[in-house]
Length: 110
Image (cartoon, rainbow, N blue to C red; front, side, top):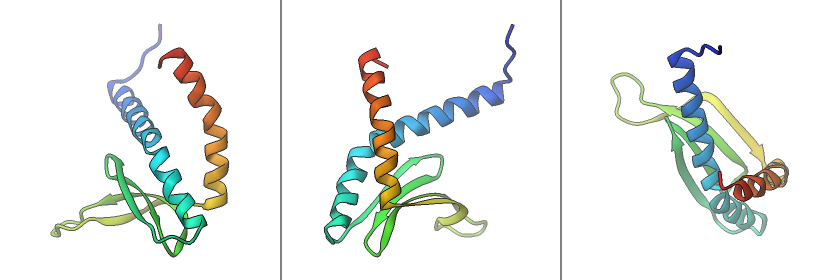
């Protein structure tokens, strides 16, 4: 018998939902990364979930994932130190790695 605490189960579900939302954004991110490759101006940002955002912006040759929060006593979001900046070449590698998995899930209708 496998015992899983409810908080662990909720955390797992939230991570799965966050991953699913992130995967939905791949095409948009890819378009903006391609625009950066050809020196087009880009200002892309999307909310993934639970305060996590992905951004692609001119002047920063990376795909940035960052968690934001609202500091106490303020009403504007601020970034946390919890961030990952993937250089464009690394983003391309991530996409090539994830692509086969996406097609498998599509075939399984997941």
